[in-house]
Image 1 (spheres, rainbow, N blue to C red):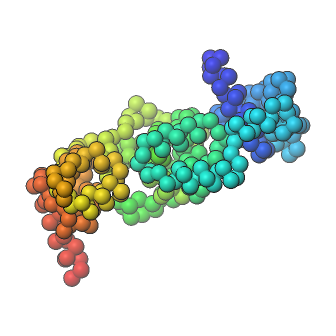
Image 2: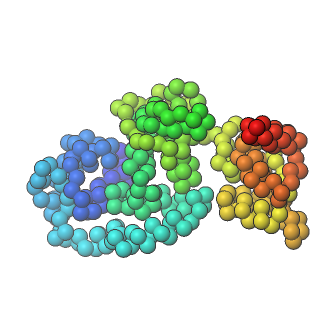
Length: 303
């Protein structure tokens, strides 16, 4: 580790211990991927620099508010409860597909104590799972996704995977599935809990993010689809799938052309069938055949 990286880590630990929450050495070492001995050495260095870190009660450390410059650090690096509520509302009002939101989330995770702001940028019921996945990605460790529900197989089971990245705004996790031996996305809202294993990746050279279309479907193969949309269909498409907007162009005051590559007919098909009277497929013929088969199977199931 070079001096710049060491300095950044020390500053991050200062922020972590300034939150008002007491931390054990093991919590500090896990959070920053260091040994307990190194964590204690940093604490000693902070004390020598003038920060007041009381002798731990029950093995828990924190930076005392009476430390020099504590007020400036605290006010600069942390949110009050009221500020967090306002920030939460503001962030969640932005579409999950917005790239600026994704960049904001990354910066907040990088700069602030996770425990203080995780609920601000990620819904509270998923925040701990995201934290564990981030730790696993950083340390290149395998994880067990406990109780993961798959929409494809319609079953819930544990998955051993090698997580290596997130999709836009942490909607899903890119990971190498050790059972299927393939890279795929796992939707974060479908994960029961995450257990980080003390096992390094075995397949790092195979980690690869596949192309993802505007309907959040990923695959190696992409097919160009063209559809004519009414005003209503156009607006609904932009609302539900904001990244689709760059592929829409007006034909006249009442019609719009959607022309984009898709990784599967499933995502775009669900949208088209939901607005069948306001969407007209231009091409390819295979997409029209796919929709006809879906309608035929649906009517058969009803009978």
